[in-house]
Length: 74
Image (cartoon, rainbow, N blue to C red; front, side, top):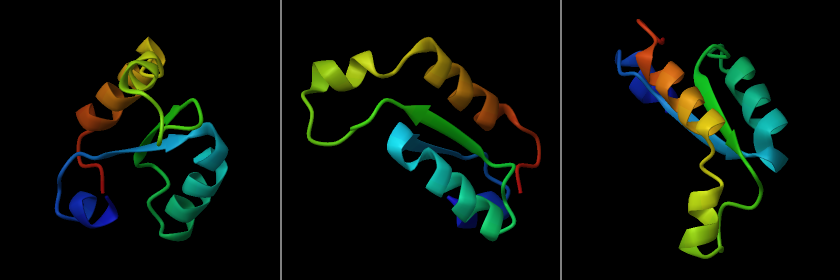
């Protein structure tokens, strides 16, 4: 994600609630704390597809849209 952003591409990370804080810390440590990060309910792996779809809330979609709409994300 960071490498793509440094190339001028719009990016958005996705993390579950359990890893939200850690993900933001990593972005801060790499000096890209302003990159978008959408946070979904935990867990996001090992669940049935219908449960995963339910976790893609309007707020998650909006976070992704906002992140991908940023100009000069790097």
